[in-house]
Image 1 (cartoon, rainbow, N blue to C red):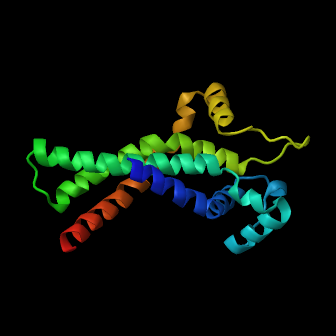
Image 2: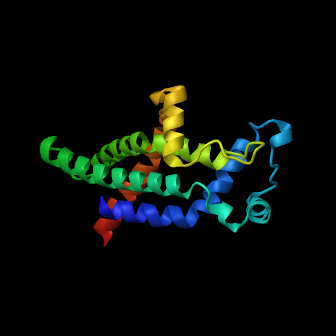
Image 3: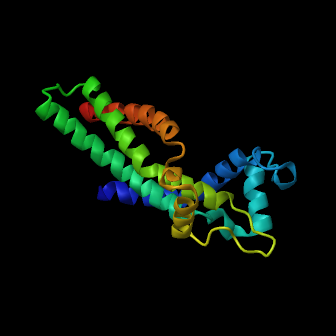
Length: 186
């Protein structure tokens, strides 16, 4: 779990500018025409954000991005190892790619369940724009969590859960089966 927490934190902090650009470009089409940013490509988005909002704006939403990555990496790594061991020990399954695949699906489910609330908050923080008075809709991570839960209900924090699992399940299956095959080779 500790390795997953550390790996998630470092990778998310370094990659936050790319994540910010991804979130903004995906959300652009849903905005009214007058509010669209109209980035032509990721490079232009990085340059415009830096020029128009300052260099530090590239790290807007870093706290929930790091928290999410820590939760995901820790959940998927620990659940995979636990599930694989339990399947071998208690279900009498052999240590094969099929067992690794089943453990990977469980790890993907754990990653999706634990990360979706962070995804919702991260996306809202990264997409927020200043109001007319210059203030932002959310003051930070916990304010966004609380405001979302209070105004839309707790289940609003799980919007996209099935889509997240549909992405996490095959990703984890490929990742962990490849890891196990590399372990055998090395």
